[in-house]
View (cartoon, helix red, strand yellow):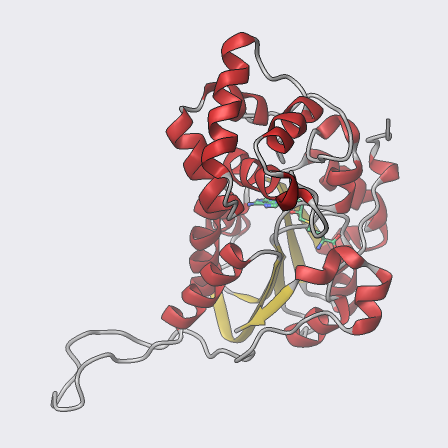
Length: 313
Ligand SMILES: C[S@@+](CC[C@H](N)C(=O)[O-])C[C@H]1O[C@@H](n2cnc3c(N)ncnc32)[C@H](O)[C@@H]1O
């Protein structure tokens, strides 16, 4: 079993150079890292700040502790906030920061969290079902798997996991738990495997990948949180400010693309209207018409980056 101590935290920062370049950091500006993790993106931003400030959010207290060690050198420029990032506005208000010059969000789970057996994120290790970013939160993967209705489980697995075998998996979860609670990741993996025909388990991804992703998203409210956070950050951007978001699956990417597109819309009145009555004003300009993808070198160095997409506005 892997150690979970802060000193052990390691995470390969995805699309690091591309993200930092896109942020165009101003040395005396204010910046947010909405998903601190191992602090890789934060370190690069902090390095470029002189009198500027960086506000770092993470729902995971271990990530904050680990990054405090890594970022010790820059501690006078950084404020750490242990919170889900949809509270970004409240945190900025409290710090008296009205506008920010840039923000980065590198969504989802860190390598450290995945590799940390006892956090229960991974289908590769046997552990108690957990998957909480914030280990003090009430809802865990155990609760989702053991207490959600079959209909709700089917919805979660189908929508958040884009898993075609969601009905069979949800049915088999409910059958198994009627006998005794499903306690561990490997118990869940066995149920998932037994719900799929042999052909669907050959090649490609691990059979449990989509279902585990779905349950993690449900546990942490990831897709509910995301549009709220994006809109709040956009509303706080200073003129010329940059917002860079890295996603890892199509559902997240679609949300980012749509929120950016909506914020980039100007007046939507028909051209025949003499004056604007819709009141729509362009808040941002989209810089990446197409998302930036990891280079061949990055893909070789870090295969986990293969589904990453960076969008900037
Ligand atoms: C992919 S990692 C970030 C890695 C980081 N950019 C680096 O270079 O080390 C994502 C981190 O964001 C945190 N996280 C994910 N969603 C969050 C949310 N909605 N609010 C706060 N933290 C979140 C996770 O706990 C995890 O530590």
